[in-house]
Length: 235
Figure 1 (tube, rainbow, N blue to C red):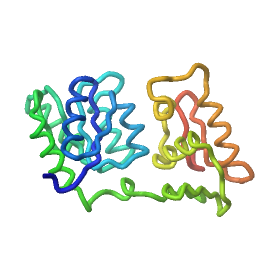
Figure 2: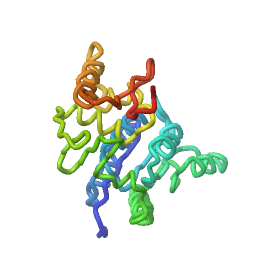
Figure 3: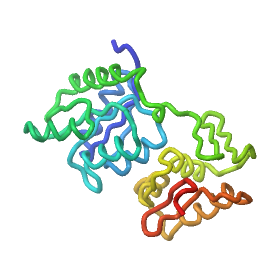
């Protein structure tokens, strides 16, 4: 019997293993989610609060070490991370822990042990998570976004956005003042089914019109060839 239900993000490119972990954690009463690579995982982590992350090391597009470095650095997230890998050398374990992992398991794994380790790292971190992980009200300059009520205001004036543009703005606000890469925003919205044409550009145009329209300070900044950032200091 588990003490509590945990929200767990499984980041694993092996679909069969990811499904096994997912099914086992769900059967234990937890609420699992899954991502096939680091980029997809970062997009989910920018929007959702997880109690723990089970992270594979070797993945396409963005491997576990690159994702973990961005999670601890750019996102400044303290969500507990259990690193899952076939790398069993001491140097590999040292690299994993120094990059920010909370625990380390070598494949092949026993699912029951993994579930216990997930509970341990999550319980160890409970009550000690950073403000960014727990934030339900985001604020950048005079732009304020209450994630529970979905009330968005700029200098006290209410703004209305479509669901997709709210998602984009939430990611920009969570990562401000850092630059959010175009591919991260596209994966956030469309997952792997990327649309033809530059639809993101159209959404950003309308988002800028709503957020910055009528304000002397422009918060949404375009980083040519890279992505977008939120903040008035990127001119």
